[in-house]
Amino acid sequence: MRKIPLPVLALLMMGAATAVALVQGGTTFIGGHYRSHRSGPDSARVDAFLGSLRAADPMVCDMVADQIGNFWTSFGGYGVGLLSDGNRNWEPARDSLYGPPTDPAALRRLVRGLDDGNACVRRASAKLLGHGEESSLGAIREGLRSNSARIREAAALAAGHAQLAVLHDDLVRATRDENPAVIAMAAWALGETEQPGAFGPLRDLTRHTNVRVRRAAVHGLGQIEDQRVADALIPMLRDEDDGVRAMAADGLGDTESLAAVDPLIAALADLSAAVREAAAESLGNLEQPRAAPALARAIADPERRVRMAAVEALGDLDGLDAAPPELIAALGGEPELRKAAAEALGNIPDPRAIDALGRVLSDADPEVRAAVVHALSHIDDERVTPHLLRALKDSHPEVRKTAAEALGDRK
Image (cartoon, rainbow, N blue to C red; front, side):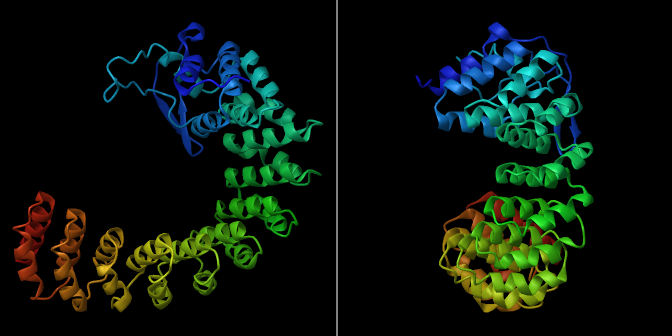
């Protein structure tokens, strides 16, 4: 099939020839994301859009599908920051794709898209269908009851994007499907509804033999506010799949459970960098100071993203009286790490860090210098004043401003 370049694809998708009439208005925040007051697409617009995706390069198709519902509305913009010769007479058609589909013919076309041979087109159809909320409810339920596993999976995807609590029982039934792909998508969708009643089915699915199902179940559990979630996620830190372990570590950071602290500390030694990073971030979210020694050791991790997460987490710990030596030493690390360390030290007013912070005031990066001044301003020690006076002569205005404010506060 002939591949269509991105600029041509954009014109095909948004061309004014099949533009639909719009209802003027803004947006409303519903179910965790914004909904447009504009009329949704008619069947001709849906057909043209899906046809363009089908003809596109697979990478381009996925890129577009990723962004459905994210940026396809002008919100009344005036073209600032756009190239002067760009023809934007397709904006009304694009904005219609942001609106919830209510036209019966458009809904039928999206339902047919759930069975498209192109996975990206199925995904786009499901996301657009889910964007319709109540208007799509019947179509989603019909898809979940289809004889085709491919349609059931796509319908579960639509249900997750719709985030409708009324679909809870339908999705629970879908978690008992014979097809693992359907089960996994239903588990993900259950999590997106954020209903406490999803806890039991998702917890049971964490023991499934299929790794995609376990990943979806763990992700779903992380979306639910329930005190039992931590107990269900902690064992998943020992799963054989690093994706499951990373998702479990990430989800535990939102549980506010003290029982999760020690398992997350142990996860800082996981073989997977993704797990170690998620564990460090979650320990920062839990804010328990007893995690400080382990996070300090993680500053020496071979992976940069883990080092950064550990430094940032140390700055988030509650009531840490003294900065670990490893955190102070991080002021001599790579530029991003120096900035993160200075910012963390701003939350840990430790006089032992004054000399190290003072040395970084000559850093080439003004953002690092500004972070250093901010950190110094929080330390109640007379040795800080000479450093702040020095920063008043800095070449960067933000550094000078921060120093002046800090000196003013010390008077």
